[in-house]
Length: 281
Ligand code: PAF
Image 1 (spheres, rainbow, N blue to C red):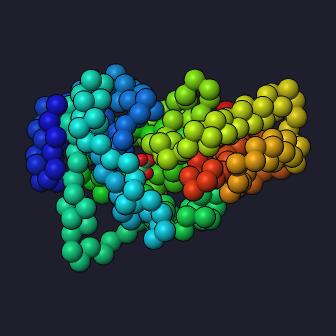
Image 2 (image 1 turned 135 degrees about the vertical axis):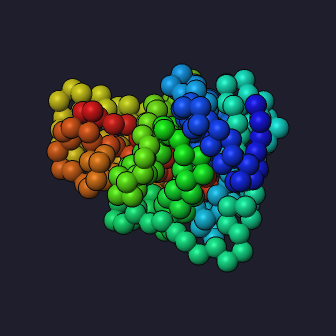
């Protein structure tokens, strides 16, 4: 496995791959890898001749009061895990390499970035689409792999890829969970022991909601009522949002039919966690 920091060097490797008709799979990450990231790598290794993973904590997707500085980083550990999982190249650019002085260009998807997480994190998705568009241009993958945990991110990236006629397939991979159900996230390390225990309420309440729908309840009001009650039953949980939306356009639905996303964002202390289930898929 090679670690490359320069865009120019990575482009040279990609050019050679293309000349040899070898497919490139891409796993974009901000590092501090967990089983969720490694499951994306597994899919990419299975489907492609070469797997490139980016590790870049992207400053443009963090708000001024967010956790860019304290976002967990451990390059040595990440390199070992990535190599064991079958990554061929880690692309780990510096902020200066990605955003040199005088940088002025941003990519923005409208409307669907203003709801759910976009409401409490203004500018977040503009940063995500900007960096992902840049990474796609550098890596030129045939396929790029993203986790379903960031459901809105996937909807937004798929829309960007479609609207900008980008030449790649975005693959959605299932959420990987801890044994008690908590969705894996690099931010879980911020949780105190008490908060970590309390955070199980997210997956618990979502699985219950899923069961309620599978058992025949299709009214949003009823499913919502259950979610609010269950999450509020956990004193450490402070709800940011609970939304029931169409997973393609993120518009609210009144009746849970095909492709409905039940998504929650909840704060435990200073840590904001998200989780979701897709029903009627
Ligand atoms: O999901 C993430 O880790 C990030 O948002 C991504 C896609 C790597 C862009 O920085």
